[in-house]
Amino acid sequence: MAYHDGMQSWDDEQLAMLRPKYPAWDIWTVRCWPNHTTWCARPAGHPIATINASTPEDLVEEIAEQEREALQRPE
Image (tube, rainbow, N blue to C red; front, side):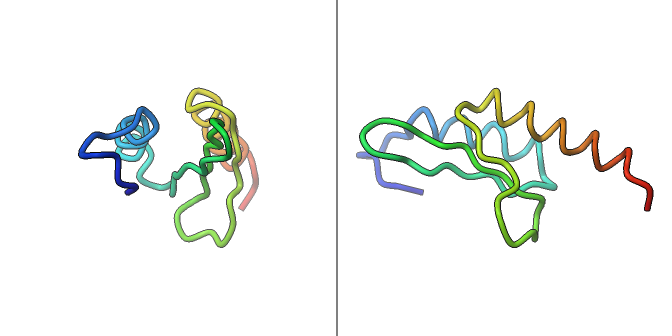
């Protein structure tokens, strides 16, 4: 976690809320200059990000979509 003078950023707080809700996913952010954050996720253990979103809400929607698609795929 990045150092923020002892305080968590809004992004850090959102990550702390999202991670327990999606234990099968690795979730992280990439901060882009000057003030944009990209929200990233991948199924745990997957080698690359499968989701890049603009907001935590978009990230949640994309996770739900990928999970729905996975359930519809025949094994």
